[in-house]
Image (cartoon, rainbow, N blue to C red; front, side, top):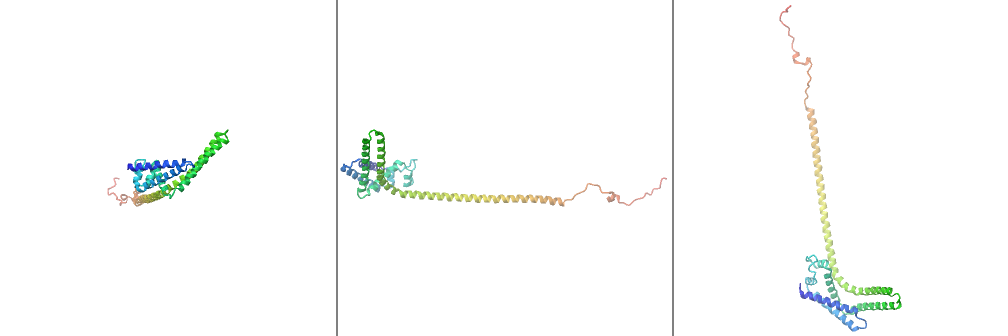
Amino acid sequence: MSQELREHVNEVLHEADASSGSLVTTSDSDDGADETAQTDLLETAAKANDLLESAESEELLEAVGLDTLPDGTEPDSIPAAIAQGDPAQVEELQRLLNLSKLADWDDGEALEGAVGELQAAIGDGERTAESGSIDDGTDETEADTADESTDESDGTDTSSDLGDQLRSAMESSFEGIGDDLEQLQGRLEEASASTVGEDDGADDEDEATADQTDAEDDDGLLDAGLGSNQNRETSGGSGTRYSTMAPPPSERADMKGTARHSTMPDKH
């Protein structure tokens, strides 16, 4: 990191804090001090603008510490550095951008008007607190509490006007980055959905193929079983059966011979 650039950034931010604080605290009667504070702030804004225009983006990120993310990795783009960087370091970059936008104003009228309203609000709040304390001395605690709440509300509302003007410069710088990040996220979601759809289709096709194979196997087994039964029936029907009972004498071959008479004389 360029030490010189880092010191320049710190110097610009320190001067901006000092001049803006002087603008808020300067009274209406002290016109000279008020004008000096406005001039100092505009000069500081011009320095910030020159710094942003002369420095490379990578060098500027390195100067504010956004070249390395909190987890120790290096961002692959400026939007990633802003989106994932340390909030304190991102705030420094935002302040520089706000000051740069402030330098684009042609004159100090807008700044003077915003600061004047803020100073008037602070003065009105102080006078309201003092008058409330005098009119109701017996209830000083409650009056002070109410006045302080009123002061804070008025001061916050008026301060927000100046803050809104300063933040608007930053918002315009980051609108493009936000759109790019949103488009990138949309493309990633579409790619993820497409991948899931293809996986589901492949799973369905595999399941259908498996079901068809199982059905064919079942048909083959059924055919084999039927064939076995038919073979057994055929074999049983064409077989020869032998009787174990003796045939009657009339059917026996040895009982059908011609009768033979004896030629021997009778012994009587």
